[in-house]
Image 1: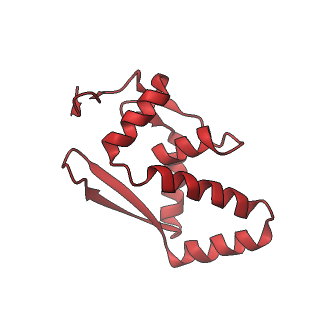
Image 2: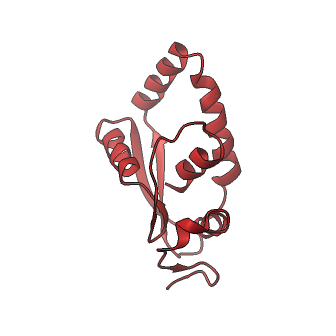
Length: 128
């Protein structure tokens, strides 16, 4: 959710999803719906893993073989698509290595309106 938010805010030229300030930062119901559809159709797989600091679980999404084939087909049909993929890859490279709290600190610092409904006290790293 946070990486898609950052990609949309900082890289992409289109607004694909509307976000609201949720309990854990930027939230988009339509993005969750799209993720659920992609998972149900076999394009992605989700795993939950504990974070290194045991503060929260982290959801990790990976493309399945079906997802990779579909992405490659789309890449071959569009001149603009590879450029968009490169932009998304840049965002992933910049932020994906951050742990969840570090990422939230960044998002809350750069986009304070997304922190207004947060139940987290980012300064202490604990739930409020």
